[in-house]
Length: 228
Ligand SMILES: Cc1cc2nc3c(=O)[nH]c(=O)nc-3n(C[C@H](O)[C@H](O)[C@H](O)COP(=O)(O)O)c2cc1C
Image (cartoon, rainbow, N blue to C red; front, side, top):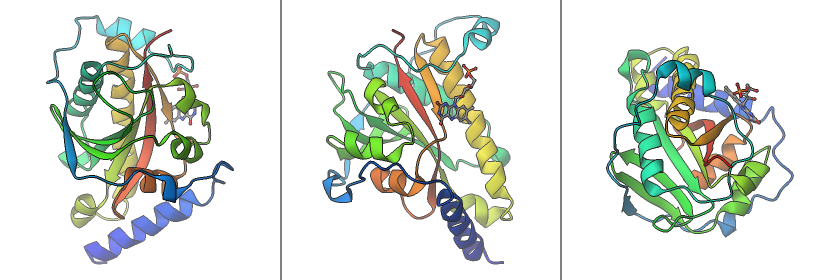
């Protein structure tokens, strides 16, 4: 199999698996999505995590469903994105995972919309604007959007890994995503924030919302907020 054939096979396998779950009955209205922009936003440079004992963080970590109904600080968001990514190992050291995020309840310095995190202090403003309706229709539990100010999406770009590895690596990329999700939980807990992993979403809708390329597959989501 050529690398291109492996990529095509994995993309179509991912889509076939996605179709085994019925999407939300809420309307996903592609025409209502704000246009894609080529703009960038500056996030505050990440700062060190608060000094807390690892056993405390590990034992305190929980999934949360009722955060406070307040926005997240842009510095807090920058820290969660940075520390979760840089502390996550991946198979073969591949950098196939990225984090996109959707701000539903905007803070004073980051407007509502879809963003793609690049690295320390930098993100693409993919779709500035209100996407709450389409985000709700992308999830099997739309209530996450009502209560959490920010939803993160773990996106795997299959192109580079499948140039190097056999198709079986598709499985390993999900292990990489699981490692990142655990770090999202731990960093969130270390920072005194709350979150919840989310597997229940429709890939095709999320891909459209986040403006993903064909080889970029949404593999997990994580709701992020402040404790109530
Ligand atoms: C990979 C993964 C996917 C999950 N997906 C969802 C989800 O779609 N919806 C949800 O309500 N909780 C989801 N959760 C949260 C689990 O239900 C939760 O971790 C589990 O009940 C244990 O609770 P705890 O995290 O508080 O220890 C997910 C957790 C993991 C690790």
